[in-house]
Length: 451
Image 1 (cartoon, rainbow, N blue to C red):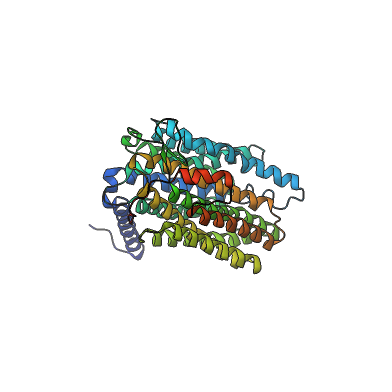
Image 2: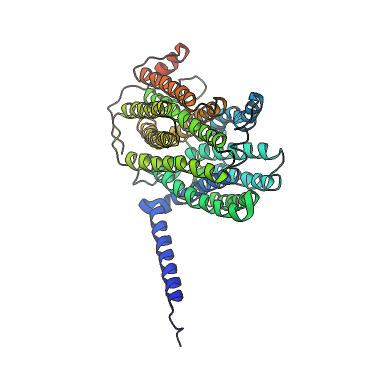
C-alpha cells in the first residue's frame, strides 16, 4: 500500500524533484556546445572548486588574516603583514609563466597539486589558528590559488570546443566560478557560525580534496604540447618565439591597470571597515559583504556583456574600461563611504571582466594557435602581479582617511591608462619599454572580428 500523502512528504518530494531538475539543468549548461567531449566540462568543475576554496578560506580568515594589521598603530606591523601575505607572491609569480613553457608534461598533475597543497595548508591553519603558523600557511594558500589561475589559463586553449571561442569559454568559466564561490562561501559561513573558523578551514580542506580529484579527471590530451611556441613580449634570438604584438601589449597594460584597482579595493575596504567598526564583527562582515556583492554583480555583468560583443577595436574597449574605473575611484575619493566603495566594486569588477574578455579576444585573433597557451599563461601572471601591487597599496595607504586611498589609486590607474593609450599609438611613458612595444608588433593584417 502506498504511504499516506502528507504536507511534509509532498514538500519533500517536490524539493527532491526541483533539486534533480536543477542538477540536470546545471549539467546541460556545463556540457553545452560539446564541452563534455572537448574536456571543458572537467576544467569547468575544477575552476568552480577553486573559486569555492577561495571563498571558503576568505570567510574562515575574515577576522584574522585580512584584518590583522588594520588597527596596528605601528607602521612596522603593517609592513610585516604586507611582507608575510603579499610581497612573496610578487617574487614567485614571474617564475610561473616561464615554468609553463618548460612544463611539457604534468599540467593536470600541477593543477591537482595546487589543490592538494591547499588541502594540507587548510588543515595546518585549522590546528594552528592562534599561532604564527597561520600566516605562512595563508601565504601558501594565496600562492597556490594564483598558480592555479595561471595554469588554468594555459590549459584552457587545449580544451576549447570547436563551436565556441576562447572569449565565450573564459566568460563561461568565470560565471560558473562566481556561482560556486557564492554557494560554497555561504556554506563556509554557515559552518563557521556553528563550529568557528577552524571548522570552516576543515570544510575548506574537504573542498580542496574534491578539487584535487576533479583536476585528475581533466582529459589527458591537455598534456600534449606538440608544436607549442612560447609567446614573448618582444622578439628574441633564443629559439622559436612568438612575439605577442602591440594589440596584446595594449590589452595587458589596460587589464593590469584595472587589476590594480580591484586588488586595492579587496584589502583597503576591509581594513577601513575593521578600523571603523572594531567592536562589531557582524557589522564588519555585513559592510564588506555589500562591497563584495556589488563586485560579484559587476563581474557577472561584465562577462555577460563581453561574451556577446564583437571585438573589432579592443583598444577602445580597454581604454573605456580604464576611464570608467578611474571615474568611479574619483567619486569614492570625493564622496567617501561604503556606498561609493560598493560603486567602485561594481564598476571595477565590470571593467575588469570586460577588459579581460577583450584580452582573450585579441590573443585569439592575433596569435597563432601554437602560441596561445603560452600567451594565456604569461598574461595571467602579469595580471596577478598587478593585483598584488594594488593589494600592497591597499595595505600601505592610511586606513583612517578614506579619500586618500582612493585618490592615490585613481592617480595610479589613470597613469597606467595614459601608458595604455600611448602604447596603442606606438609610444610609451617608459622609454626603455618603447623598443619592446615596437619590435613586438606583428605585421599588419586585415582585422578579424572575434565573438
